[in-house]
Image (cartoon, rainbow, N blue to C red; front, top):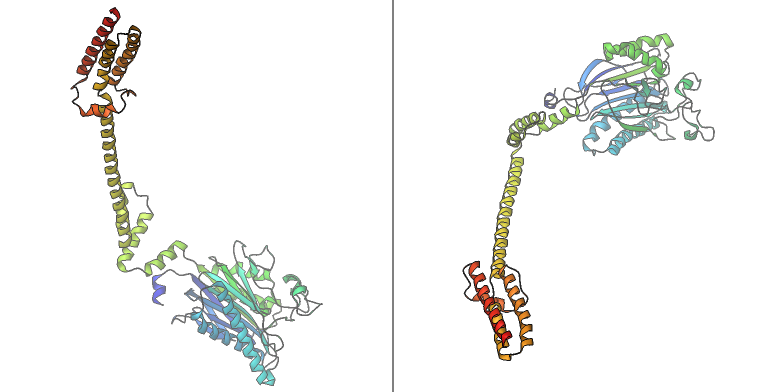
Length: 490
C-alpha cells in the first residue's frame, strides 16, 4: 500500500468481475479491463482479457481513480475477439500515458474518454484494412471512470452501464423510474434509437423502451460501434455524477442485459447485496442459465463501500501538507473549533494559530491600542483648548469699561456747560441708559455702545472683584443724579 493511502482517508471500493464465453461456442468475443489505480501504484489491480475472474476485492480510490471497461466484439470467428482486444488495450494505454498531462477540468476529462475510444476505433479500422479475414470486425464499448468521488461514463453500441442506488435518486436513468437499478446509457440500437437521431434516414429508429426492446426481434441490430470503416465511432460521454456510499455500478455486455430484464437484475442485487458484491455477482451468473443464456457475457461490479466525510477528507489533505509543528497547531485549532470558548480564552485561540496568523493578530491589536491612545490625547487637548477660550471670553465680558463709567460724567459736564434744561432732561434719559448698560456689562452682557474701547479697557488695570466694580458704578451714578438735580434747580 502506498504511503498516501496509509496517511489519508480514502473512498473504499469493492470490485468483482467475470468475463466468460458462457453458453456460446468458440472463442470469447467479450473483453474487459479493470484498473483500480490509474496512477500505476504497486498495489494496483490491472487485469484484462477475455477470461477474467476477479473475486470481490476491496481497494482505495487513489488520485487518478479506477477504470472499468467492457467490450463486446463482433464480426466472425476470428475477428470479434480481435476487435474487442484492440479496444481494451488501446484505451488502457491512452489513459495511462495521457492522464498525467491533462488539465483538471470537466471538459478535459470528457475529451480524454472520447479521444481514447476514437483512437481505439482507428486502431481497429487500420487492423481490419490490413487483413481481409478481419474485415468488418468491430466492437461495442462501455466505460466507467471513478475518481475524486465522481463518476464519468461512456458507451458506443449496446453494452450498458447501470447504477443501483437505494434512494432511487439516479440522475440520467433511462429505465423504469420506480426501480432502484437504472441504466445510465441508452443503447445505440435500431429498436431503442429515437427516430430523429437515427442514421437510417427517414425510417429512423423505433425509439422503444427497455422493456419493449427486450422482446423485439431486431434488438441485436447496432447503430453505432467501433471498427466501422464507413462511419467513425461517435461515443456518448456523460458525467460527472457524484457517487454515494453504497452505490453499486454494473457494466455488462448484451449477453446479460439482452437475456435478463432490468427488474430481474435488481432482484438479484437486492437479494444478495448483504453478502457482499461477490455474492451479487454469483447470484447474477447463477440465474442466467434459467433464462435461455445464449451469448458471451461480461459483468463488472463496483460497490462504493465507504466515503469519508468531507470534513475528514479536508482535514487529512491539509495535515499532509503541514510540518510536524503545524500539525500540532492544526489539531489544537480543531479542538478549539469544537468547543465554544469564553471571551477570556481568546489568547489560547491565538496561540493555537500558525506563527504568521499570530503576528497578524498582534499587529492588529497594537494598531487599535495606538489609535485609541492618540484619540484620547487629541480629545483631551481639544477639551483644554475649549475651556481656555471660554474662560478668556468670560473675563473680557465680565470686565467693565472705564470709558462707559465715565460716560455719565462726560454727559453731566456737557449739561453744565449748556445750561439748557430740556437738553439736560434728554441727557438724563441717556444717562439712565448708560447706567443700565454699565450694569449689564458688569453682569457679563455685551454692549454695543462700548465699540472699539473694550479692547483698551482690558489693557488697563482692572478691579480685583465684582463688589468694587459695583461700588464704582454706584458712586458714579449718584454723582450723576446729583448733577442733574442741580441743573434742574438752576
